[in-house]
Image (cartoon, rainbow, N blue to C red):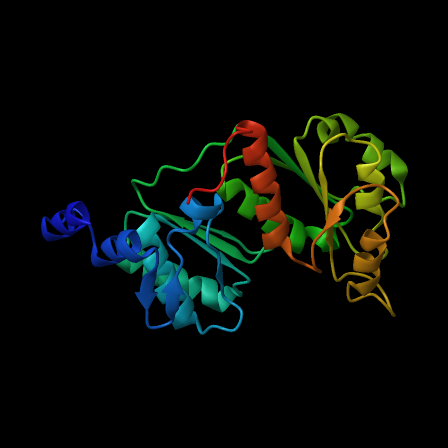
Length: 258
């Protein structure tokens, strides 16, 4: 504790960084940012923009960059993303900010941020272009945790050849995230072709009854090949689960820090 207080007094730490070290979280008017999550769980804290005002999201992103050197914002619409970017540009002018409009993510890194490196490969495969929102969110989140991430898009099972053309890439993965809507056959099919863990990511794409992702989720829960499934459009959860598996591949003895 004394070391942290001395660093704060010397100006080597910001108040947010000092609070994060002492308490494990940084407090803002919009809420408390879990600055210790990556140390504790091996995955980054995400800032969910849905349900927050742009100002609240920006305040949380500022606390994230200030306490950990990185902010990961999910489910940010264009207006929120623009306001968060403008706020971070003013408060952290040396930070880099990247936006994936399709994934609705925004990632900011401080100039001195050192990203984690995990020696493992995650492949995110999606059935159709309409599934890209969830698949890309998963890819962004997994990548922020350190493993190498590759995406394979638009290989729906209506033409099995498209999947088979990518079989070498899929089989080279240490963990696969398979995103699909409608009846979500793709994850079940992939899980029968690879020896890596497969995380099924159902998406809310399709027609009529069950087209809101329910049919896709139920299809994954009833899969005859072994896989795990996350909730509908839960790209963040799929990405973090894949990252945890990747960490285990990189260092089987590693575990969450106390």
